[in-house]
Each structure stands twice: as structure tokens, then as C-alpha cells.
Image (cartoon, rainbow, N blue to C red; front, top):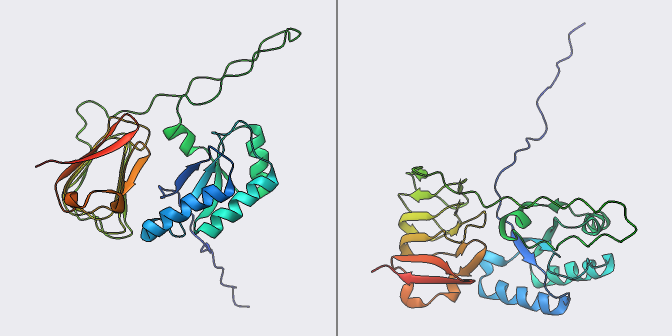
Length: 256
């Protein structure tokens, strides 16, 4: 009898990596207003925001919304043209809500942009024999090692490609094409045209900066604060610029 041929090849290959997902921190549970704001973003920059994946962060609310309220918000955002795909990590109520909604929890964003923003634990009642053990403080944003030259990208970054410099700066010697994305926990230096997206200070480093020779970016961000091309004065298009945070405001200025 002929031996049966066994197929040991997996049907799917699972990999983990950096993905471009926006974090929507809800500060007021008003589905109509939130949908209008996102619809405006989609209208102004459809290539960037249309059908964009977003993580809902309810940490800015006094209480976790109920499942019906959360579903109403998700439906409104779908109608605005964006796709909620997960909830940001939060309380145990938030974890239960994610199960009820059938959405995963992501801890990444709270760690990156919300350090020190967690409410203090409530004081223990007098009848409690021992006070609750305080939560450990969040770790500081990772910093580039002194003398570390950072990650050097010698080839152009093409559409659909993503380069990430973890805990260091990123230097790109060529162009960053439309639809490409460069991310660094430190600063980003681009010696060619920037036509895609550049996100510096990805782990919350507000002192990071972006430098490029020819500014035509779809989006630039430092420590989560961002601007799209439509929000930037036309006289800066095509110019050598630097991008930095001044307080909570993202600033862009010509280098010439």
C-alpha cells in the first residue's frame, strides 16, 4: 500500500510587528459630535483617514460607558468612515466591555502617550485592615543610548513599507514615498523628500524632532501630536523643515 503523503505546511503564517493604528481618546461621550469630527478628518485627508483603523480609549471619561453607549459610538464612527478595531487598556470595567463588544484590548497606547495620566487609587475605608497596594509607577519613556548612532536606512522607503527605530533615532538617506511610514522612539532625519508619514517620539518622547529636506508629508507626529499636509501652510510644501513640540502644539518651520 502506498504511503499517504502528509502535508505539514501551515495554512497561515502569523507575524507580529508595528502597525499604523490611530488612538482615539474619548473625552466626551457624544457619538454625533465625535462622528462629525472624524468625518471632517476623513473629508480633509481621505487617503490618510478613510477606513482608518482606530483604537477607542475611554480613559478620558469619568466612567466606562455601557455596552449600548459604546456600540452607538462604534456605529457612529463606522458611519463617519473609520473602523474601530479595539479598546485601549484600562480598568476591569473596560476589560469586561471589550468582551461584550467582541473587541480586543491593546495596552500599547496608554503606555506610549498617557504616562502618569492614570487616576490615583481610591483611599481605603477605615474598616479595611490593610490599604490597597499602590500600583507601580509607569516606566519612563525609553531614551536613545548615548553615542548610539541610531538606525540608518540607506535605501528609499517605498509605498506600503514601514521602518521602525526602537529606542533610538532614525536616519533615512533617501526618500520616504507616499504611503510609506517611518517611526522612531527618538528623532527622525530624512535627507530626501518626505511624501509619506513620519512619527517621532513614538514612546512619548516630547523632545524628539523630525527633519527633512523636502516636506510633502501625508502626516507628521511627535509624541502622538500630529498634523496632516492639508493643515500646513503651503509655503512650507517642498521646503526643508523641522517639526517639534512646543507645549502641546506641534510646530513646523523652514530650516532655510
